[in-house]
Length: 278
Image (cartoon, rainbow, N blue to C red; front, side, top):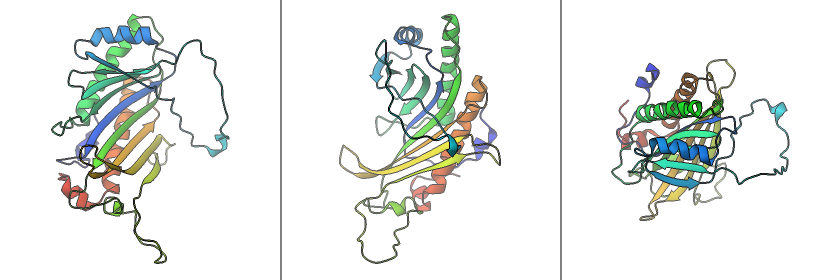
């Protein structure tokens, strides 16, 4: 069950969310293409469509700077091509399972203007159900048990002007901490601005649980070249236990950090445009 704290998180009538993904990374190798295809055959009635995408590299988080070394060039001999990432999609294609050799996730994406964001609680439930089915599949197939290493939540937002801002020189009207003040009057207004920030996720004085990554960059809608800001927030951390409950707990923590950070970073004028409820 989701922590009751979620009932007090900021909420909006018209959130600018266009994509949400919850995912768990586990020790590899567990899966190959034959195993993934057998898994798909179990759920193909509900998820009939398949799409291939490049795999996501393994995620790591290092907090002790003494363990950070210079990047090294590595070569790896492979007996077979890398296992791709597969999108196993519902008929509507707005909801899908992401699966690869060392990851399992569930996503929603907005494809049409009238597609409503189903909210985190519903996506969490779908992820939990499919993860249970996936773990049962591993057991039925006598495959190696999933040993989770990282949990990840990602929210992607398309922030339109909404009569608050009009061009990409006005990021400070979306993110107030990006002040336009300069020490001397030489530079004109910037053509555009983007920010990349990260924060350590922790609870009290405990050891870090993970990191929150925030990226905001100027974009244009392809349909009519309307300027937008694409704001991506990703919370990644270690599972709070090796079972499914520990995975869901970390996802809930990541979700809370994303929702609170989104509201903390963005302006009250944008909150009003999105119809803030609480």
